[in-house]
Image (tube, rainbow, N blue to C red; front, side, top):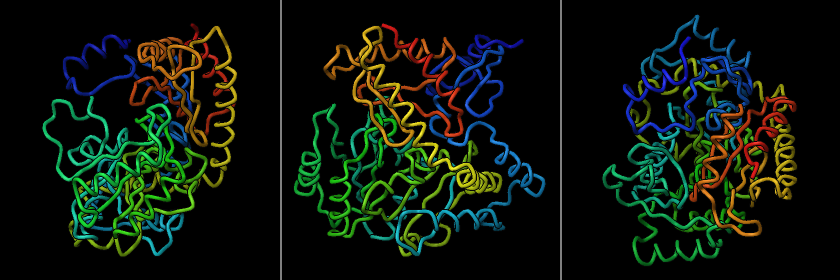
Length: 425
């Protein structure tokens, strides 16, 4: 039998060091919210492949749709021979997106491709090049996407200079002592000191920051960003790569606001584990790029499109938006009880809409002094006890929960019981 240790040794010899790992575990099979490693050990999955598996591992409807498409063809390149699954998926997403129509969509493979192409589309539509992003934001690891990302280590350190004409505004969080007024004041400073708004093509923002710690954009900031973009002819891009497809209790997190973006980036849970991303947006903006300016050899792969169509069916048939709210309430209720327990590590700032739930591990009760070392130990204790869990946040002390929305209550409760053991003081 192959062991986790043997595979880790082979990995260290053969795979670049720049790929990080949360655990030394190697998966052998998975189903819904459970994973078994190569040694036969079972784990409850509270990571969901980093928010990719809102419909769980190997959902039978998704698997059936991919098998059916596989019997027909696996690739043509959409630019060479178009196919209906791509077109049908665009039609359905255009109808679902919280943007006033008419809308159009385009598909890619990774979340970084979605954010990069959203910027390209905005530049084509405005004839400008500058972009405003936020500290703590994560938009991918490619050259433009990492420039947009508001965190140096590990996404930029040692990897050369970032692309120019990207400016970062402090993201408002109580943990960092930044308010909406502070953020808007800083944006005004940028416009006065660094770049005229007439040179800005886009503002890109995650409605709820993912890697940045599950902090939601305050409603007054989102309204202000919409007003600034309208005033200066700037494209507002919502990066919903992690928040999209039910995680926040809405199909799109932008549905929590009373304003709309111009473009939405999607990926992760769009296709139930198959690599697929896209940009949805206002048709006149989406059509700004010349034919051939967008696309990719594997972009909008037919297997992934078939999977995505099945994912949308599952959301309707299994009422997963309601399920996200129920799971989120279950998680928050447990965490509120855990916060009052003296036998557990001190936790603070339980947050997140729907089932996009996180909390911070702090050094002392009643304050926000982050404890990154304790957080690392909790993640390790969790997987050693059978729970796959992720951390995040600008201070590396946030624990995030991304359990599949299809998980049964018993599995959720089992994972929480293990989390309690991992949090034992």
